[in-house]
Length: 128
Length: 65
Picture 1: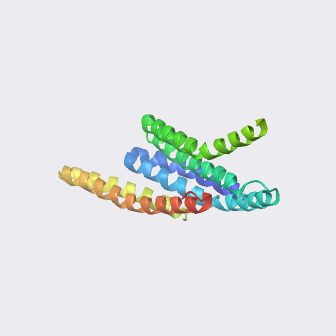
Picture 2: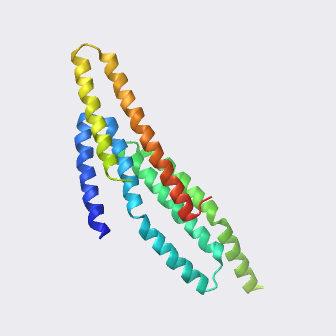
Picture 3: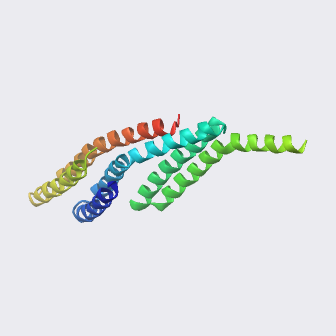
């Protein structure tokens, strides 16, 4: 099971970070970055499987494909923003993390615009 | 993407701190800061490589072009 490996590595990395933080604080952040990337690559298989299932569901029900593409993009942007923001908070600068989060929100909002337009078209179509 | 990268970075960190102690005691303080800088740069090269791999993977996965 992948879960035990994840938990084991997570605890191990926390201990390593504490040890290295006393000896050389600069490297603590670098270890955090590298370990979070490695743990992401460990769970990437699950994301692939979920994507395949979603594609099948979407293709069966004749939902518009690019709506699902936008949702996928938003999930990707959300993950990246959360990755960077938590990293900044860990390294002790929450102000920068807030700027990243603000930027992420705006990007996601701009991604949503086509959906809102199509929603309005549908509603107007019903009303007329 | 093995776990060994984490311990490689930790080892570099500890090695750098040991060399700093030696350099400080032998009176060459400015060299100590330079070795720290060199260590951080080396590890940054490794990290940048991993981050670029991460971004490429996420771009493919979520079709974020």
